[in-house]
Amino acid sequence: MPTKSYLYTPGPTPVPPQVTAAMNRPMIGHRSQEFANLHGEIVEKAKTVFQTANDLYVLTTSGTGGMETAIANTVAPGDRVLALVTGNFGERFAKIASAYGAVVTRLEFPWGTAFDMEQVTETWEKEGPFKLVLATHNETSTGVTNDIASLGNYLKDTEALLLVDAVSSMGAMDIRTDEWHVDIMVTGSQKALMLPPGLALVSVSSKAWPIIEANGGVRFYFSLLEARKSFAKQNTPWTPAVALFYGLDAALDLILTEGLSNVFHRHTRMTAAARAGARALGMELLADDSVASHTVTAIIPNTGVGANDLSGILQKNMGVTFAGGQGQLKGKLLRIGHMGYCSELDVILAIAALEMALYKAGAAVSLGTGVQAAEQALV
Ligand SMILES: Cc1ncc(COP(=O)(O)O)c(C=O)c1O
Image (cartoon, rainbow, N blue to C red):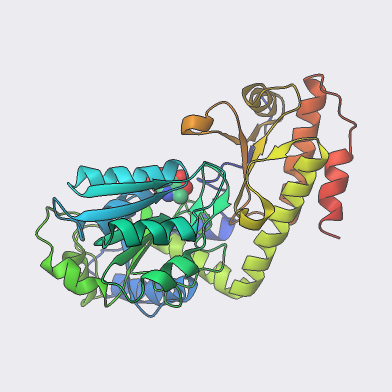
């Protein structure tokens, strides 16, 4: 086993040393003024990343807990919900709504494609109105980004709330929560926000509050009404993961110091390098360039060596971890996460490892081909 390991899963992602150091600070009481100050600063910084003036809450839970918060506060049994499903995480959003008793209309799109606005409007005209529309901004299982701006623009004059899962893109891609009319935007800590797992961030629009207040469904730990009450004291209703709050503060500083537009640009370039490298190795990309995620690249190996075999070689011989396919794509994909604390050179390294794994597996690959293409995308 090599002594150094290289993590390219699309969450959890590597954590910068500044963030790790911040998390090692001594514990403080979460009802102290010191925590209240920290909390206030974090929320303001996070709002800048979300590009929102809406209320924003930092919850001690995973991304799925953030999604459940969005649903638990807006869905009562029997409510009609439209779920746009473009992969595993769209599927999850729909399942949570069903679990809360919603009557869910699933509009499914082939995995590897984005949702199609024409089909969305057709469904709305034939079957609408719906109380909620659920969408995934960045479908991590397929490496596809959906056009939330068009969806929000279509829904803004309806009564429907738009709930968006941006768990694997917030902090890496240009997400305009307010300009896109997103009512509840959800993200998680362990992706582009460069933290360990354990926090979810949720923004709530003024259009959403009356629905949340009127909702008679069940909620307790995930109650946004409780979160809002505590927020008035710069606090959280339950004991927060204080160490992760320290880390989040440091991570948001890193993002804002680099500058949002520079962060977005870096992710665009890393995507271009990953895609060029994989293509030069004779591999196929699941997502079309026009909808390609900037945080995760899903690759169909197509070189005579299976995804699982390649993953095994990468892991055992080089200490490199890629993710595999999920759901219907299990065993068929390699997914390279390139978000957060990840540089252009890290992507070159990922492509170099992939190329060597192919070579070791006996594929007809000329060493250097993938790396050269990835480098060319960057120089
Ligand atoms: C798009 C998306 N949504 C939701 C989740 C779920 O987040 P968690 O695993 O933190 O519950 C993930 C995690 O991979 C994700 O990528």
